[in-house]
Image: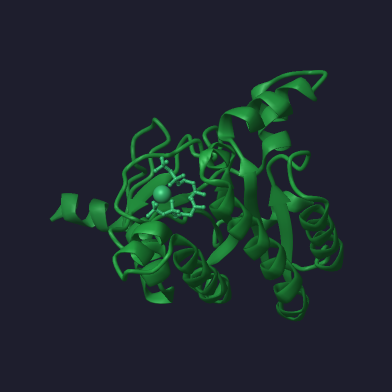
Length: 236
Ligand code: IPE
Ligand code: IPE
Ligand code: MG
């Protein structure tokens, strides 16, 4: 069962990988150079995720609204996604990473669809990390599509159709918004915003975000359970 991936000790982290364009422009480079540097960050972050306590990692790579960008940038991003999937599939198998794409497939080029299908098939039995790449993804459309596919619509059935709840949601690039990412799944996500542009984000930043998460008290609408330390403090 896919949901065994999230338990007490491993987190579902979602990352809005933002800031590639500004990183490049700040260096006098074309935006595509920022996306290329962003792919290298993806490789480092995926490698570091299991060690940081992450069991499910969902990366926002291309939003359904990103089709609004100039065709040359969209093409460059699509080519990079295909080559990332083709290049990484072997390493994913080796490291036990189960790779999956979420989002619409009907608007993607056949070559990218093939790369996705091949990567998903080859990595199906991975149990070390469940890596979900969001491509042509919209949180609102995902909720609509999941709801439309359900005969018995309930909170539980919708949750099961969408995917595991997000524990930790990170956005790089200094913006403080969700931009249509994992809207339902992030109902109680802890939010961490990083000023770093995505190409500058590294394993140490991921670890710092997880530390920040571990220091937070999650209430889910209730009141925090008394911890031993709190009780001791009260008795003093
Ligand atoms: C994130 O970086 C990558 C995608 C959205 C595909 P951006 O391309 O949004 O970079 P900025 O926000 O313009 O700097
Ligand atoms: C969100 O970043 C999408 C991805 C990271 C893939 P955007 O750069 O597209 O978001 P906005 O336009 O700043 O909200
Ligand atoms: Mg952006």
